[in-house]
Amino acid sequence: MSAPKSSLPNKPIASERVRSADLPVAWIMMLGLMVAVGPLSIDMYLPALPSMADDFGVSTAFMANSVPAYFLGLVFGQLFYGPFSDRVGRVKPLYIGMTLYVIASILCATTDNEYVLFVGRTMQALGACVGAVVTRAAIRDRLTAKQTAKAFSIMILVMGLAPILAPSLGALFLQFFDWHSIFWFLAAFGALNLLLTKFFFFETLTEENRNVRPAKEVLSQYWDLLKDPSFNYPAIGGGLLMGAMFVYISSASELIMDTYGVSATHFGWLFGMNAAGFVGLTQLNQWLTNRFRILSILRFGTMMQVLSAGTLFVVGIFLGTDAWLPLVLACIFFCIAGLGLTQPNASAIALAFQKQRAGMASALQGSLMFSVGIFGGLLLNLFPLNPVLKIGIALFVLMSLGAFLIWQIDRNLNLDDAE
Image 1 (tube, helix red, strand yellow):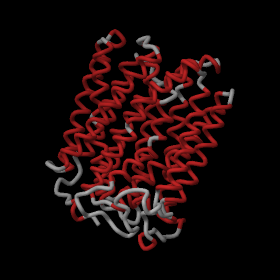
Image 2: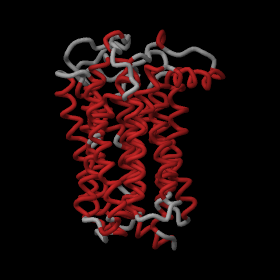
Image 3: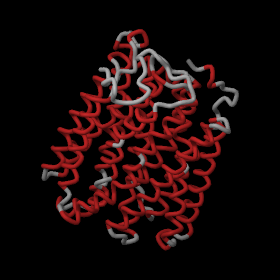
Image 4: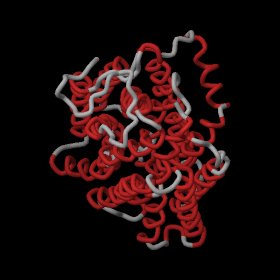
């Protein structure tokens, strides 16, 4: 679907790739708003977990399993939308996904059963993940590799406001309403995404660039992607780094609110600080990409994350829950903020050499991230360790593995050769 002629500046012809130094900033920021449905859905209800647990008669740790339930939907949903969008274009999947998201949000808002809530959360994710897949692929359709890294940084500036504001917004809702109101708000935000798709999202994938291979070959195409070193090292490495953040999200309420007794309002502020660091470094990344190689910035960011996670690991071993809360939060802050230097660049490298399978590459990259979040979050609940040590182990192991893979990327890889 084409946008109205006056809707956004720099509207391209569908077959045109932007080669100039100018980026279609308004369009990119609109994509960021569409992707924000994901972090809003993950983070906005976190302050409500203790009150939801009371309503359902379960523990906060049990109710926190609704976070991995959401990640489960993200994994499988992205794997569907990726090849689907490569075949039919970027617009139709957005309509399907956002409609499902609105329906699932209403289900979560009206249920009084915790297992129905888990199912609703998975359905929410199956709908919400279309935004991340399609927007990354649409950016790849239009922009060069270096422009893509900058575009992801701009997009994160918009979507990054969601995890900064979401916990505080959720806490504000709880002051005046119960937790059901949070899911009614999310349903309304999904409806807004449908309107954005209708009026402002134009098709970026031309007919000649669509994937016409038989649908039965989808699994083999994913396997080919995983064997491609220009994709697998940055995608899997970046997935491990980003997945560690989702492990933190799964355990944040238990660690900060239950262990340290922080109120829901203050939890929102503390959670937002990490997101603010993430967004801040993504904006610094735009400046850095004009002066340094993308791979060099990516490797620097991984070292920042590994050192911070290692410090948290040591704190967990020797101090446990007796550790000074600001010290624990500082370690977590630099782990999460470092993603601002790793995620835009890992994503840009992973997508750079994918053309007719950009949607699949975007989907597989996203699924890898959330797979880490699922299994990492569930494993946290299996070990009878203190919460500080549990999250320290998880972050350090995942970020160390991610850094190892990032260092395997061919340093002579020429992103200017990407079509």
